[in-house]
Length: 274
Image (cartoon, rainbow, N blue to C red):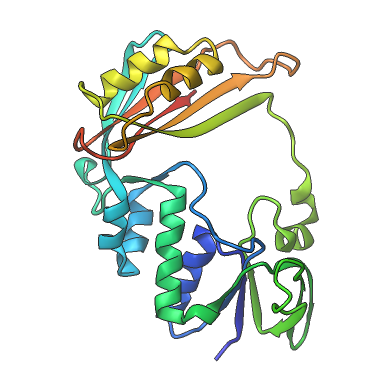
């Protein structure tokens, strides 16, 4: 059997481990952080990704931490509807489109890995610093400062790099990928706990954004001031342009809201879209 090492225990690394395990492999995962925590904001899980989760045997667990998206609606900067379409099964796909907090998704996958592969399948506090490949396999090097019990190097037949935007594996395989370019846009994202809306999600999200569209601080203060109950969560995005950066085009960002299947659902989401 191939000895497979996965660098990174984020949602992608954990899902890769689960799929490999279904094929008869027992991969080992190495993660830089000393403790996995449910961090992040909202993520949109499209029907094909829900299909993967279903085939992992995790659909019920996933439904317990996510909500279904039924409709996607686009608005102008003045709140005028310009386009709408159904989502997931409501549009004819075989699977739902769902929204979930990234941290909850990661913890669900992490628990599944521990249950199926064993607690020793994931080593935390072990940051990959590089690797060398030869005809016989791959030697991976680690910084184990946060976990002295972890290895400083190991051998494997295959190494899969799923170590994020600053991937050590990718930067060595594709050095040009380290070059990034600032688009002139800054995206702010957050999650706010608040009571469920008393009117449809689309109307609620639209009015909330329109009343705070001019300044991010207004969005933040308006949302945070209502964060007293625990029955709903709002995932919000706000895009601003750096005045010093070259301006590309003059169109205002359109608003995108998503209606959920029930006003009692624990996830409502909006985002800026061009």
